[in-house]
Image 1 (cartoon, rainbow, N blue to C red):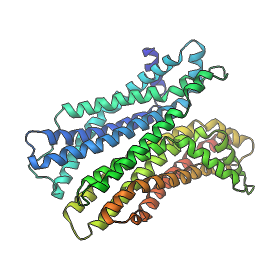
Image 2 (tube, rainbow, N blue to C red; image 1 turned 180 degrees about the vertical axis):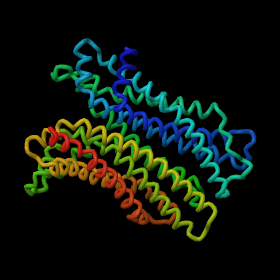
Image 3 (cartoon, rainbow, N blue to C red; image 1 turned 90 degrees about the horizontal axis):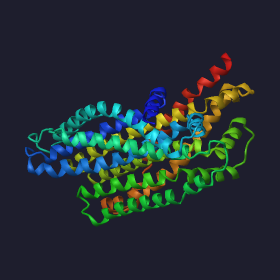
Image 4 (cartoon, rainbow, N blue to C red; image 1 turned 90 degrees about the vertical axis):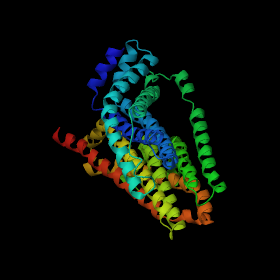
Length: 441
């Protein structure tokens, strides 16, 4: 099975490129945080600098690791959708669902190790840049130079690899248990009961709101109010992302009561969203994470800026940290979003080509997929904005004494615009292939 898995990984190297990129960027970020943590624990570090150099990377590293695992699971699941026939063939010749999942885990382990090595090296560089920036801001002493060592960064890289393997195993669950002959698999249906997923989502959202609420008990001038709200925003965003299926179901209900104006593009998009919502679910998942985490953190920083308008020092430091969080996590999520979107569209190439062959114009084919993407962006934006704003409300009250500060539209509109441009731009480019293929055929 291991030999087959390695041969499969080599054969599907393009499909696993998305997973490799997620692991590469994830390893870079986590290793950088581990290097900063090692610097804080180093004997040569100035004692007054230890709190920041240990607390900051622990908080950031935990956020990033949680998102990496989530991203790998979703990325592997989308990649396996492109290999349905191969997996069915393995099942027909006797492979059990567990063997298929183990094979996928081995494949993911192989690509994870290959991607983690350069990721760890980039992590060293990124960690050094972050510490240099913090020194330049005056938050820590220049004497506390970047001293990452080897143990913690290596352990962090290994942990990401293990997380990737776990993500591959979990992500293959649905594909491995799919019936090879198309019959209804009662056991699989029972195993895929949404109860566990919904329960996990509720717990994550509750934990995030609880973390955010603790900022009300803290000194408004303390950095701990921000440290409590940041993870809260991440947790509620991850919990909401787990409900992507429910978000799409609600969206389809809303679309059901909106009059169909007879547009072929709109009509086809409605049918696709209603008939096969699982194709759009990964997109909604990543859009909710992207918009929720990024916009929520930017909203926090806008409130921080207003609260510290007349003071430099800690306000400038927190601004730098929060902007760094947004840049790092948003960049990672953008890569994961782009990878999954390209994989999902590649899986639909035959369908899109058939649409072109039966009479749909290239513009109609592209317009259909763009309309599906636009609906996904709109639905994700509404849900992500609501949950992120709710998570930031306690922070606004603690800092400014009013919840109305979360109504500032700039952080949310800006990140929704970025998500929309990224999503629709990738779709417009990726859907050019079916038209060219049909015309050449």
